[in-house]
Length: 174
Image 1: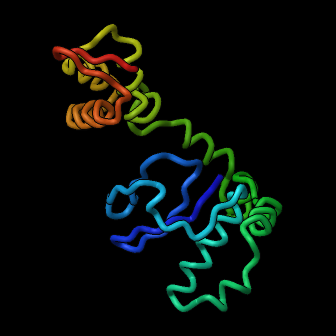
Image 2 (image 1 turned 135 degrees about the vertical axis):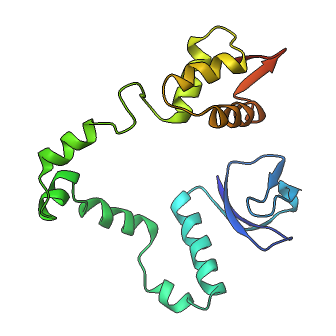
């Protein structure tokens, strides 16, 4: 089930999938019981819920008539899916040499030691090292071109989100 709900604090509109006891506004962070949230529509169709929210936002901005002229999300998605140009075709039509662009993409300007995003490298350190300390994760990621500042921030965020636990200075992925 999908619901278009509104925040009584900041008037933000958003979609909820499913139903939980409480909800938190993504804009202002106010937390309310699900039952106390204003539900403008409840439906089994996600695209219908998106259409309702988009229509409400357009009406707020005085663009309701222009919005009414647009197709639904389903129709727009089908239209976009049919007209997608693949990367090679786009590059060729832009006058670029596809093979040269592909070769340039293979050359990583950060050097050959880095594989994956910075976040992936930190997560891989937590998987590969057995109960590492912060310094061990920093060293692992540093060998792969990730700064110590980024690693410390990432460990803090991962811990706050409950992806990683920290006990007595040692980390492990949950």
